[in-house]
Length: 186
Image (tube, rainbow, N blue to C red; front, top):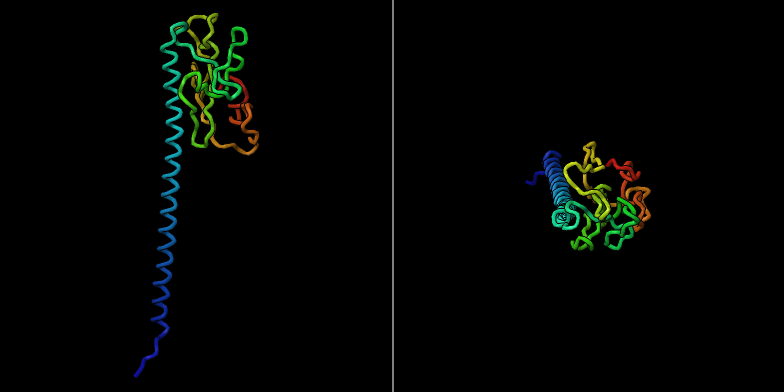
């Protein structure tokens, strides 16, 4: 005698199949999220390493300058990796790309592949006519309301909406908001 399957036993199979699908989807979501977090952390590490190398190069340059100890080179404003030459006693600009050739670091790029940017306090420029640098030399930059900042190294990241002129030399194509207005507050 054969017993016909009841609706109840079929519901058990459906429930198991449903649970299996939910488990597979949850596992896929978890693994995808884990992989994207790992990739993001690797990219963040690349940016951190570039910023650290730039900071070390600037500190080393300031410490070993025999002509004007504590001074720093002008930023690179044309993208060639070299610090710009002075225009009279001043840098042509105090914000631009990090002068990696002048500082002999090789190209330093953030995780999005952009060259680092660099802001210099004018009082610390490396010009022979500038006043000697000592504890009383004011640094004129501020960063997040912290004043007396000597230099700022910036990883611009990927372009934001409206920043589509890359690779230009315009500050506003790499920095956003009040960071792109050209004043000394960042």
